[in-house]
Length: 322
Image (cartoon, rainbow, N blue to C red):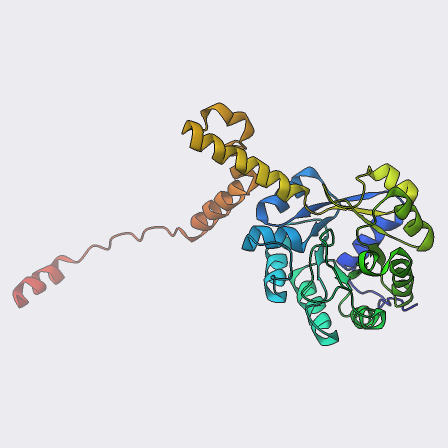
């Protein structure tokens, strides 16, 4: 298995922060984020780790389903905007790497430059689709493993917490998915994620079949049973991600507000459902900007120069010249 090496005295990476969290031996619940507001709210909630998923970004940025419409550049740009707001590490969905091995490497480098602590890299055929949709197909095992190896080999210069995601369960069966997960560990990934197991028994088979850190993906109304973090951790899963809960909640809340506006013409009856205006400004960091503005203006205010009196003789000369 390839191992990450780190030069003595080198700065600790965000990927190392994630590895340290996993080593604690406690379940790590990851909130899914998709824009600046959701990232700030996740920060306020106190998540130790968050995930920026393609499904939610496609929905919020494009208003489109997760069927491979987002580009590498759009995801990297979204990661850049979100990572700057988060003090906790951010894992970012890299889909299939958006092409071959060079594309996967470039994706990893762009995400690292954006501030991501790690990536999820999957084995679907492009254009991919949400892991809980029907009609998925996967590439040959060797092709996926080669991409993973290339990204792992970027260490230590580009150190990312690499999650190997396989969608092989649906098209090829659970046994092949487990084989792929074990093979991914051999190329040096940090964690394995088998997407969309369809029962508790399948979750147990994954936990028993794959050693090391594993991801459980909890998608509301998805194919996998929704279990609590304690139960999932007891069954062998370390990282528990809720990638779409926030955007589903957002859609429901906005739908309720718009419906009320259309039928009543006012929000006066649903004020308790709205985030208070001043509190929202605080969430966005308005006071920090005000303080910076005030300090900057104070720093450049110069004393007004005193008016210099003109000698009487000079005033007389000026009049004479006229």
